[in-house]
Length: 128
Image (cartoon, rainbow, N blue to C red):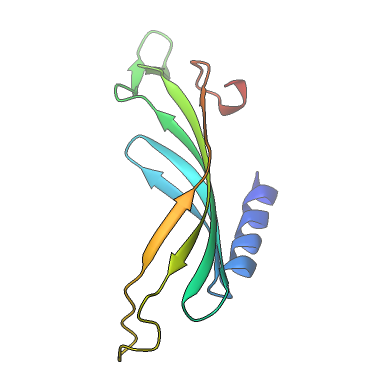
Protein backbone atom coordinates (compact mmCIF):
# COMPACT_ATOMS: atom_id res chain seq x y z
CA UNK A 1 0.00 0.00 0.00
CA UNK A 2 2.87 2.35 0.79
CA UNK A 3 4.30 1.80 -2.70
CA UNK A 4 0.99 2.84 -4.27
CA UNK A 5 0.74 5.98 -2.16
CA UNK A 6 4.33 6.98 -2.89
CA UNK A 7 3.78 6.36 -6.62
CA UNK A 8 0.60 8.46 -6.61
CA UNK A 9 2.38 11.26 -4.74
CA UNK A 10 5.31 11.29 -7.18
CA UNK A 11 3.02 11.25 -10.22
CA UNK A 12 0.92 14.08 -8.81
CA UNK A 13 4.02 16.15 -8.04
CA UNK A 14 5.45 15.64 -11.54
CA UNK A 15 2.23 16.20 -13.47
CA UNK A 16 1.01 19.16 -11.40
CA UNK A 17 4.23 21.18 -11.69
CA UNK A 18 3.52 22.63 -15.15
CA UNK A 19 0.23 24.26 -14.21
CA UNK A 20 -1.55 22.69 -17.18
CA UNK A 21 -1.94 19.21 -15.70
CA UNK A 22 -3.42 18.04 -12.45
CA UNK A 23 -4.01 14.92 -10.42
CA UNK A 24 -5.64 14.66 -7.04
CA UNK A 25 -7.93 13.08 -4.52
CA UNK A 26 -11.51 14.09 -4.04
CA UNK A 27 -13.26 13.41 -0.74
CA UNK A 28 -16.93 14.07 -0.13
CA UNK A 29 -19.71 13.30 2.27
CA UNK A 30 -20.79 10.16 0.42
CA UNK A 31 -17.64 8.85 -1.18
CA UNK A 32 -14.13 9.36 -2.47
CA UNK A 33 -12.40 9.52 -5.81
CA UNK A 34 -9.41 10.53 -7.88
CA UNK A 35 -9.19 12.84 -10.88
CA UNK A 36 -6.80 13.85 -13.66
CA UNK A 37 -7.09 16.86 -15.93
CA UNK A 38 -4.99 18.28 -18.75
CA UNK A 39 -5.10 21.58 -20.68
CA UNK A 40 -3.41 22.32 -24.02
CA UNK A 41 -3.04 25.86 -25.37
CA UNK A 42 -3.95 26.23 -29.02
CA UNK A 43 -3.55 30.00 -29.10
CA UNK A 44 -4.39 32.93 -26.78
CA UNK A 45 -8.13 32.53 -27.32
CA UNK A 46 -8.59 28.71 -27.29
CA UNK A 47 -7.59 25.93 -24.89
CA UNK A 48 -8.31 22.21 -25.30
CA UNK A 49 -9.34 20.28 -22.20
CA UNK A 50 -9.43 16.68 -20.97
CA UNK A 51 -10.56 15.38 -17.58
CA UNK A 52 -11.08 11.91 -16.21
CA UNK A 53 -12.45 10.95 -12.81
CA UNK A 54 -13.08 7.80 -10.79
CA UNK A 55 -15.59 7.97 -7.92
CA UNK A 56 -16.56 5.37 -5.33
CA UNK A 57 -19.93 6.61 -4.09
CA UNK A 58 -21.58 5.23 -0.97
CA UNK A 59 -25.28 5.23 -0.23
CA UNK A 60 -27.05 7.90 1.77
CA UNK A 61 -27.79 5.48 4.62
CA UNK A 62 -24.24 4.07 4.87
CA UNK A 63 -22.96 3.95 8.44
CA UNK A 64 -20.53 1.95 10.56
CA UNK A 65 -22.02 0.41 13.72
CA UNK A 66 -20.40 -1.44 16.61
CA UNK A 67 -21.59 -5.00 17.26
CA UNK A 68 -21.00 -5.74 20.98
CA UNK A 69 -21.57 -9.49 20.51
CA UNK A 70 -18.72 -9.94 18.03
CA UNK A 71 -16.65 -6.98 19.27
CA UNK A 72 -16.33 -5.74 15.67
CA UNK A 73 -17.57 -2.89 13.52
CA UNK A 74 -19.78 -3.59 10.51
CA UNK A 75 -21.47 -1.43 7.93
CA UNK A 76 -25.20 -1.05 7.43
CA UNK A 77 -27.01 0.50 4.47
CA UNK A 78 -24.49 -0.87 1.96
CA UNK A 79 -25.14 0.63 -1.46
CA UNK A 80 -22.19 1.38 -3.74
CA UNK A 81 -21.83 2.91 -7.20
CA UNK A 82 -18.67 3.40 -9.25
CA UNK A 83 -18.79 6.45 -11.53
CA UNK A 84 -16.14 7.09 -14.20
CA UNK A 85 -16.70 10.25 -16.28
CA UNK A 86 -14.28 11.26 -19.08
CA UNK A 87 -14.74 14.62 -20.76
CA UNK A 88 -12.99 16.46 -23.57
CA UNK A 89 -13.74 20.01 -24.47
CA UNK A 90 -12.71 23.48 -25.44
CA UNK A 91 -12.38 26.72 -23.49
CA UNK A 92 -12.83 29.95 -25.48
CA UNK A 93 -11.60 33.35 -24.25
CA UNK A 94 -13.53 35.97 -26.31
CA UNK A 95 -11.63 38.94 -24.84
CA UNK A 96 -8.12 37.49 -24.80
CA UNK A 97 -5.46 40.18 -24.29
CA UNK A 98 -8.10 42.94 -24.31
CA UNK A 99 -8.82 43.33 -20.57
CA UNK A 100 -6.22 44.49 -18.03
CA UNK A 101 -5.26 42.85 -14.71
CA UNK A 102 -5.45 39.25 -15.99
CA UNK A 103 -9.25 39.20 -15.91
CA UNK A 104 -10.34 36.68 -18.55
CA UNK A 105 -14.00 35.65 -18.92
CA UNK A 106 -14.46 32.46 -20.91
CA UNK A 107 -17.00 29.98 -22.28
CA UNK A 108 -16.48 26.22 -21.95
CA UNK A 109 -18.04 23.26 -23.75
CA UNK A 110 -17.29 19.67 -22.75
CA UNK A 111 -18.55 16.35 -24.02
CA UNK A 112 -17.89 12.73 -23.12
CA UNK A 113 -19.13 9.44 -21.66
CA UNK A 114 -20.01 8.67 -18.04
CA UNK A 115 -19.66 4.99 -17.11
CA UNK A 116 -21.67 3.98 -14.04
CA UNK A 117 -21.40 0.55 -12.43
CA UNK A 118 -23.59 -0.80 -9.65
CA UNK A 119 -21.05 -2.31 -7.27
CA UNK A 120 -21.68 -5.40 -5.18
CA UNK A 121 -22.86 -4.64 -1.67
CA UNK A 122 -19.59 -5.45 0.07
CA UNK A 123 -17.28 -3.52 2.39
CA UNK A 124 -14.15 -4.41 0.44
CA UNK A 125 -13.44 -2.34 -2.66
CA UNK A 126 -11.86 -5.20 -4.65
CA UNK A 127 -14.94 -7.40 -4.16
CA UNK A 128 -17.18 -4.80 -5.74
